[in-house]
Length: 425
Image 1 (cartoon, rainbow, N blue to C red):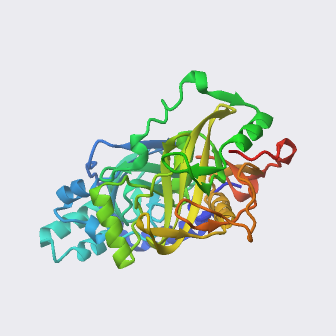
Image 2: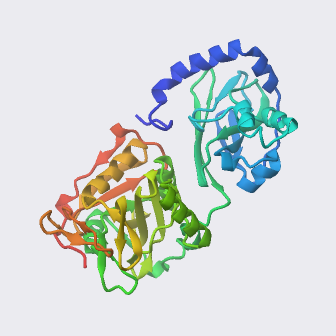
Image 3: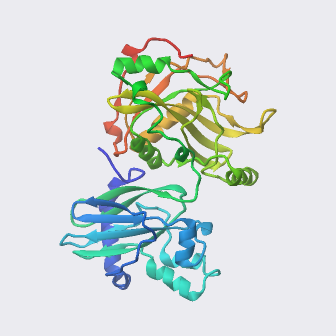
């Protein structure tokens, strides 16, 4: 059974409805404050979805736009306003809940208090007037305002959950926020291969093609082998994007002055720079088409992956090959002075991704093929920076989805009847 609430919180909806309705009944004064409220959108980058008799529009202002709207730098205080408008065309009142957007949201008064030393009283009052927490939308009416969330740069992914008498409305939004120089913005995925090079394959052909792909990444000159290419994704660009955003992965900045400064500062302070650049590794003679990362306690501890589009198409969907690593520290190296040290048990990192996408309801099918070549524990191979790794030699093939898919709906497919035992070059 699929659940579109992050973290598998669908079972909370009945309880949430009771709690929310009780709070609204008690907080009559606060509810009256928001009735009929209209707050203009912060920009023209609107994202709109309709579900039955409900239309929700959202927009996320950039750091500069936020400063102009509220007169203070909210982003530096880890506050990111998200504008939400709810148009209720039904005959029943509905309630917007903030938990789907950000379980750690800030109330309008709390946000004003966080910046009160920098803002005069009128700015604080304006923030409270524009902000919403739980919003009761009367029948046949439109209301809008800001929910104050924690900062997400690059792409802001969130749910807008609205409850009423009938089934809940749960809409997922993925909103680009200006400010970062993201690596995949510079890649022409659509024009990567001419039509004459596209190869449409059935399942048996797919396995054979995947096992014949290169075993490992290479350096820029194509001379030395590095980390194993142990991931395969099947899915449209949009599905890939939504799958990783839903699972909590972040995009990656390109390497330029500002990103290098932020990376260095995070390394010194031990902070978690969620969008830190990754080095270029090569497949098909080109660097990765995109990189994603999942920050942990610091920049020195993160999971990151790189992907490359192949010319293969299965059932019309693009096929991607990738590599994943778990950073577990930093060490000195003669090539780059410092580099991240990876966990040598790369198969565990591969399986982490399978579980991560599954629990994020972003995986609909998976199976395993060869192609990497086994490297046993007592005979490990090395990557381009000298870190050893060992592996069973398998690639996991992941059919990703932009639509929420429950754990009980995932299909584990046995690809062994089609395997050839051939390891890619």
